[in-house]
Length: 139
Image 1 (cartoon, rainbow, N blue to C red):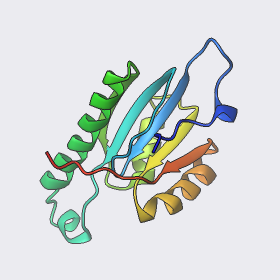
Image 2: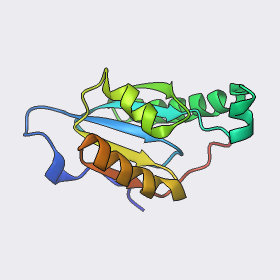
Image 3: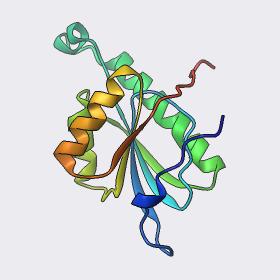
Image 4: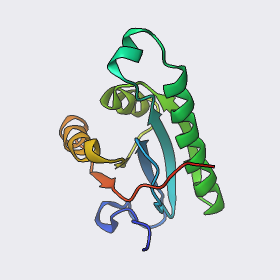
C-alpha cells in the first residue's frame, strides 16, 4: 500500500516548500516531498505515572518515535527536525507552532487521532489530516 502524501490542495505554490507539523502519536509510513517537517512526539503517559512524575518511559518512547520519523525522512531526502513534546498533544502542537510556522498539521496515531485532528483543526485553523496505518517500532 502506498504511503499517504500531503494533500495537493493544501500545498504552497510551486517553487516553495510546505511546512508540515507531524504529531507522532504512533508511526506510519508518510511521504512529504518538497516539505520542511517538524516531528513532535508527545510524551504520552498514563494518568497515574503523570501524577507520580514518572515520565522517563513516556519520554523514551516519544524519542523513539521521533528518531523513526527522522530516519525515514532523511532516507527520502526530506528536511526534518524533531522533538519530544508535552504529554498533552494539543499543548505539544501549540508549543511547536510558536517556533515552527506550519502550513499543515498531520496527526499520526490510532483511535485518538481523529478526535485530536478535529480539535487541532478548530483550535489552530490549519489544514489538519491524519494517517492511520501504524507501524511497529520493535527493533
